[in-house]
Image 1 (cartoon, rainbow, N blue to C red):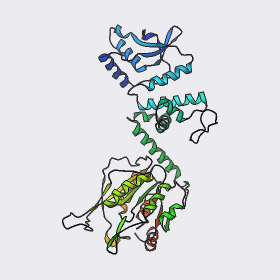
Image 2 (image 1 turned 90 degrees about the horizontal axis):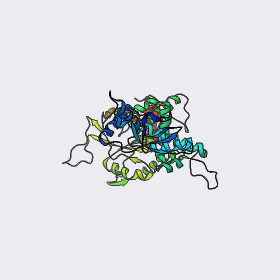
Image 3 (image 1 turned 180 degrees about the horizontal axis):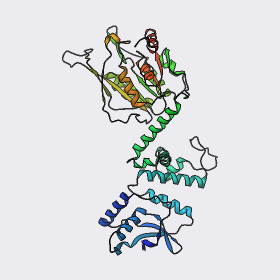
Image 4 (image 1 turned 30 degrees about the vertical axis):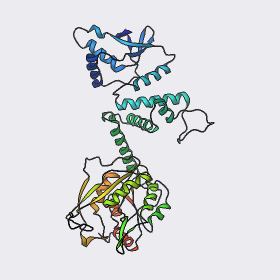
Length: 420
């Protein structure tokens, strides 16, 4: 049926659409007419809007946007429904609005949050801690129930409710164009706040600024889970020459098994690798739970060439690969647009602490890309100690392990300031 637009009351609880949304709807109605009617309920001789505010606002523009009102838009197609209570109206309104196409992400997450809160008010909030309720536990309402009602995953609902709370705190997030970007901004803000609050008073689950001598898998196995924020490391090649033949390193892979356990969720892992090792790690790390970038970072080794293992007809190598993997779904802390080629000069031979030493400027760049001051950085293959040195300079904290006595002592000397 058609009802006069002047007889429809708009509840204050309905989020107001943007001018852009209304004008888009005006154009659509002019071209195609109104495809879906609005929903209202009878209320003391007039009507109260349940769903369809953008459509109603568009009709108001079309009926009043000229000197002579357009009579075609003084009435609007509507479904008039009876609802037993205000709660039933609220429930219907939430579901109707969630069905709308092209809903701004911040409106969508707010509606989901309101639906979740309404259900908890009706049934009682599930106890914190997650997990499925026990069979004989009293019925309560959890995020899992909201996800089931809306036919979406628990992860999506959890993230959307977190977004809704963030928008309440910082309404300027509505200016962000898409939900994924907004979520990254929120995660970065949380990490930054945690890091800033932690300056000088942050508590760590393990001793920090440590250099330890020993087998990394054994050392890491003795630590609690989820203690390290990120890892930057340069492990030995998985295969190396010994006695004129290739020998597989049996001590490297167990370290990554323990590394996954001891890294926090949302951790970055950077590994300096050769070509064969890149392809091997790319296949094997996901079996532990890491997500691996399909393409590596490329360190362009300025003013350096290598012919190790290169045939006479092959080009010299002046680059090295850096595999990037993550545990969970972190966001880069440095959002400046950047490419995958990192241009840094090699460490001059006369200054080398270790034959495979990486430039500290390169390590500092990686630290800036993934971490914040106060972050705990682990390097289970200490080598030259450059990761610990860069962490110290960049106001991070470090946990470095080296199995060779000579290199271990060199790292201690380097961090003491005796060796620059």
